[in-house]
Length: 533
Image 1: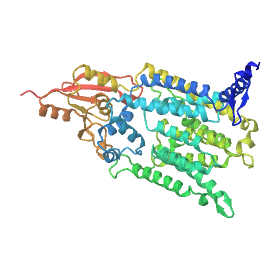
Image 2: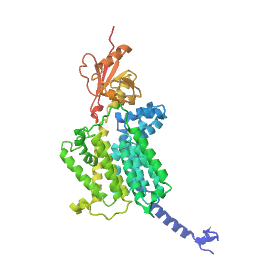
Image 3: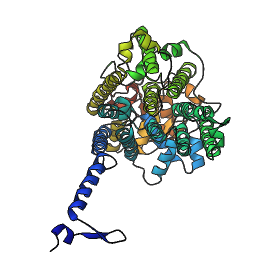
Image 4: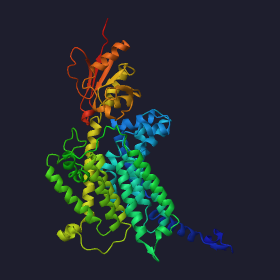
């Protein structure tokens, strides 16, 4: 009689060779172990991504939209075609990718919360790339995912910067310096990144030159560059050129834009502190934490801190020349933009931090080069040897900030626009004519899905058109509201982000919504009655 394992065996191969069942089971177990350990189901990445999704979902559910979030939604909502969209967003100063995503979304729904869901999905995708593909330790991956910028500034607040972060880290995953076939995909990602924001364009240009053009030109074989011999060179160049040109054309403002480009002493002072604020976004106050820093009153300390941070970050990339060039280029571009055009806020110069993370990520794929010792290695060899520890501590600070600000956002309204809109709806005033003293009405228009009259733009609309008219808007909207009340023979509402002066006896105060995290997103609602004749 045959042994049991032979009787239960199946035929394998062309000659019908019998394989014992026990051997098959043993091989299957080994394959399963290899599957789990290498290319199989990644429990860590799945768990970290799922945890991020749940935490960010709770943040989104507790976050009230403010005017910059609402403005992009309204532009997409009010556009009837792609050409209409491009025309409506011409004063925004940003390329169209985020607006295009919202445009597609608004073809199916007018519920503004879906924008937050879209941003949540994008942020979760970013977390997955970090968890599954980044070269950091598991602890660093956790800290990076739950840091201030990925979780809160770009994950909870729905802006174009979230999709930019996704594309940047996607490029880090796709880029392989020794594989020419990846250049087309990398070029597509950088072109899309350039069309997210002006800061995304800066990073895209710097990365394209540093990680694609320079190595292509520097790699020679028989006196001819590999890039120029590559079948992909034309595609890569065309993709990058089209993407960058589209971004530049869209970011170029109209002649009557509200923004003026001029060098101010304020820009100089603030530019010298932005590096510190990008790497240490520790708020000064919990009541109004947004766009504040713990060292706001100590400018010299922040300037010194910025210099130290630049030395340490450059040292971290010192032996990976391409990564160092990329980061130095991004830093120079952002600092120059801050100096000459707009210093911005944490959400803007935070790209200094995420660009460093991306360069550190890519540096793991580059070969270490024999170069002289860096400045930090000369000054403090012990500190230079603790690069990974320093990065872990820095990421830990960002997690601490993310936990603090998320907790505050849970307890207090980020903007009072949602509450003010709910008040009007509950009082049956959602369709009443509204005069907005300033930009306050944009948040109301978004939540009520209707237009208001802007005294700055001197017209009825939903989103704000940031042209030169906003430099001439009336200080007091009572006159405009009274005129509309008399014409319409009905009460007219005034919405303002600050109390009206000289309103006693003319404008009747209906409600005040104060205590928001964003200070100029508080709302004061007044009623103007028509003159009785």
